[in-house]
Length: 251
Image (cartoon, rainbow, N blue to C red; front, side, top):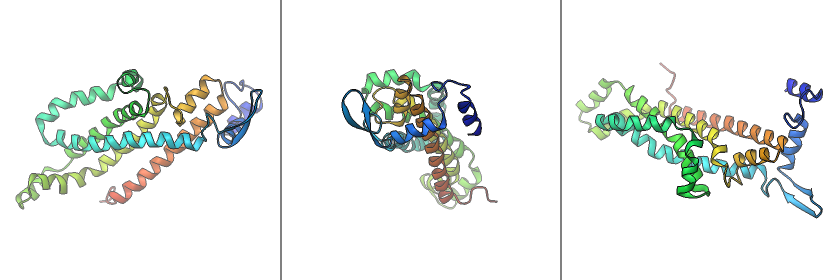
């Protein structure tokens, strides 16, 4: 912050490239209030693009929640299946790595062709970003389960399904929670790409649109909000992880 104040205060960089903290704060306040617009007609506008910034953030959170939530629902069972049924894992794992290696901008156009420019294509993009890390974390967790634990419950009369539910799932939960945290981070880094087209309301769409309009203070404000929201969300996931797996890290 001190370096930022110094550079902008001495005008070492043009405000177009690096706005001052004060102008970023003004843009943030403007994006969360009603204000007049100087277009020759006296009128009051609401926030930015007719939405307050918290509404942009909420819209992106809803999309991320839908995409990551779907990835959790689909990825965990598929990860369990791939790690417990060998031939399924052998066949499916190359496709999983192929999907993981694709950059979101590489197939956003195809998703728009398939699902339109509405929320459906955005949620699909976020799902595809979150699905691989959750599935791979589940596979890693199951493969790390000690075989003697599974054999012990099987010898005591448990079915294969009971062994999966009562032994494998609890044992893999720490890895799954890590995968969910990583997936949520990927989803946040993908939100701008997801909201390139018809992304308003959306904090990623606001950051992109304000950048194309050379509203640098608003772009920086949106970037800061995205970063703070990501930190808060990760902290919430860490709290949930402590509740679900309190034994993690303990002997």
